[in-house]
Image (spheres, rainbow, N blue to C red):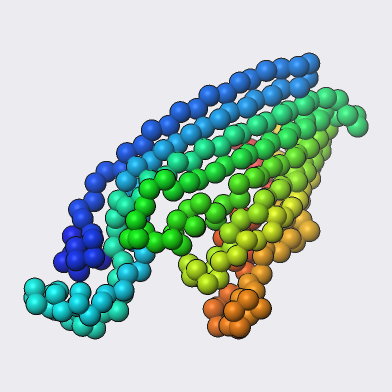
Amino acid sequence: LPPTNPIAVQLGGTELQPEESQSYTFGAVWTIGDLFFTIDYYNIQVDDRISQSDKIELSQADKDTLEAAGVPNVQNLAQVSFFTNDFDTTTQGVDAVANYSTELLGGSSTFSLAYNWNDTEVTKSSPITGEFKVSRLENDLPNHRATLSWAQQWENFSAFTRVNYYGEYQGVHVDYDATAKTADAAVTIDAEVTYFLTEEISLSVGATNLFDQEAEKLDFFDRTGIPNNNWGGKYYETSPYGINGGFYYVKATYTF
């Protein structure tokens, strides 16, 4: 519902206001021989965030009050939601990257290691937002992520491999709190090999999630006794590396 709808107002809705934010960041860059390092810290505070409220049940007293005020068909409603400025968040994190270039295997090599720590905290909220939305904002994304990559270049060939690490996250299905669980950390591997036919034309073979790492499977039958097929899914859709498994491709590229 619009936040100024009489039903929303009865439940605490008010006219939306602009979000306000402030952020700061600082970092450092340095080189040691062929090693290149960067590290950055960021902090983002957002006040009066606009989001949809929790699903709020209408009590019989609410319905009677609204009906007396002339709101039609209110007795048929069970629960509603509306947009609000109800909560504030603080997101902070660290990005660290190290690159190393050298000659290897008759060609040029670049190794890269990247790490990210990210944390979001809901610093103010009310029951209008709901505990589960707070949990999703704080826990759906992994706090830790890292990648290690190797790019190799020869005269007519290139190869690229990347190892991706995803820390624990909150698995959620169909935005229902009964499905929530802490999902395991996981590792995926991407790879690509390219042959340069000419300076303009190249052919590549590659894979994303080469070894077909599965996303976390739904398991509420074990935890709640509710069969998984009642919920129309097999995996937690909050998986940070998707739910489609491995993706394999062949591509031709023309550069002009």
